Every structure is written in C-alpha cells, then in structure tokens.
Image 1 (spheres, one colour):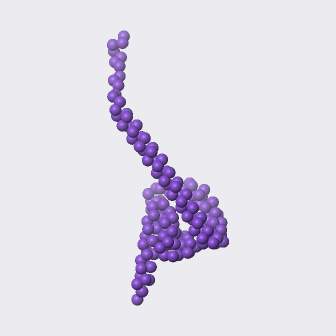
Image 2 (cartoon, helix red, strand yellow):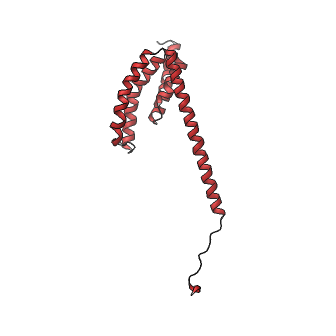
Image 3 (cartoon, helix red, strand yellow):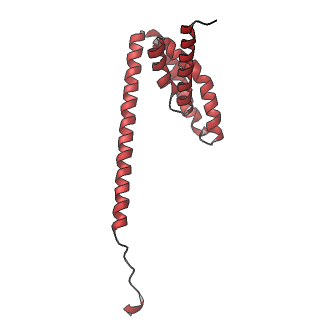
Length: 156
C-alpha cells in the first residue's frame, strides 16, 4: 500500500500534469506553468523540472499538433524555417543550461516569465483600448443622421 504522503504527491503531480497539458494543448506553452508548479509545489529542482517539461512536451505536442493539423491551423511552408534554427539553438540552450547553477537558471526563467507577462499585459491593454475606441467611433456614426441624396431631375 502507498503511504498517505505518496498518494498526495502522486495526486499533486497528476494535477500539475493536467494543468500543463491543458495549457500546452491550447498552444500557450504548458511548460510556462508546468516548470514553476513543479518547483514551487513539489520541491523539484529547476534542472529536473525543465527536463520533465521536455519529456512531457513530446506526447502533448504530438496530440496537439494532430488536432491543429485536422483543423487546418498548421502552415507547413513555415515548418523548416522555424524548426531548423529552433533545433540547432535548442542544443545550444540545453548545453548552456546544464552548465548553469539551479539558482541562476531559476532567476533567468523568472525573468523570462516576467518579460512574457509584461508583454501579454501590454497587448491586452492595447487591444482593449483599440476595441473601446472602435466602439466609440461606431456609436458616434450612429448619432449622425443620414443625408439624403439630391435629386437629379429638377436641375435641368
């Protein structure tokens, strides 16, 4: 039989996997959540959390990719343009990360998440402002009475 703590740990890992899978399946980077959740809630080291994320990413990406292909959301003409440099630099990134201390890796990942969050917030504010401005313009156009075209007959 499992100990109570072991069952809770297994349950926590399953919940974290579900959250990462849901976010990853939507194409929003499940690892963006998966890594901090593993580090914060399970005490997993940063290096191990990133490795777990990479392993978990493979089946999640395959399933999500199949669904996106079926829905016509994949542009194959960009596949090599994106994949080749990404694969090359992922090797470099993996080599660099194995040489870094976990504290530095955590810090850089945190900075990355902070920049990503600020960027997303700015995008939301810009889109909200644009939508509000467009709505205001439509309301103003509704208030302007339509002009009637002048008749051509009486001007001879």
